[in-house]
Image (cartoon, one colour):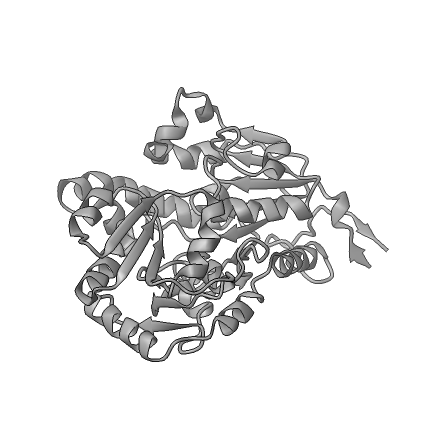
Length: 383
């Protein structure tokens, strides 16, 4: 007996579709293995993501009707828990949420299996509240709301039958905040697009990141300026002015670049600098797929992808001085581009899709598991 997944009515729930980043790449891969699926999301900017996603039936919330909402949707956070609960999902056999904010909080109909692929627990409600909202008056004003948001986040986690985390690091946070276990399926890197270059390595270090406080771009700038090492930075964001004030003659800002420009930049770099703590971190894999090592802070998802001394170097104090020592160690003992590429091959899209399908089939099969309420999920089985 096996589960015929092609017969399932599948609802894919995603927080919002206004850009095409790592979460949307995961959603695109889920659309590929569930071509019969429909997408439910809070906000959708048409044409903002992949052709495969745009071709699916996309259902949006009433908040999407607000003029220009794609520019200020983050400020609607207080309304998002209530809004996601209004999503109507009757008639589906499987709900598969792709969540980093509130998507996991949909209310599934009785008998419908809900599996949530969690990119992260809600960072601004838990471990990074201070980085997002700061201290002083701003923190005092948002504290009552964050208290409510944490209660909702924990309560809504009980609506999920099975969690899949994108890393062991995220699985540990699911255990800590929700008291739930999670299976782990790592995301993937586009191995066809990110490949080793054919020319010589350049004379620069590379940093590709959004300019957010927890990314710690300041450490990379300070270290490279003190060492006299050329640093190229790709990205933009809220910290832009502060980071440019910190930079000197050794730092070059390229802003946001089209995706087509990134493989050559990765391939030509001495190494990628990765000084923040990420839940998983796809950028190091993109660098390694191009044969470029990674110098990373030794915490979070980086510990699950980078092999110290083989495909990169770790530093363990989040300071510019510690990063400088790691750069010196790397320059004294360079890593093999071939080893970097070989490490990246494990993180293929085919592996990701196979593991997701295997877990979905396992949890849909009543012989291998029941829903959390003890009932068998509503599924079709072929003998």
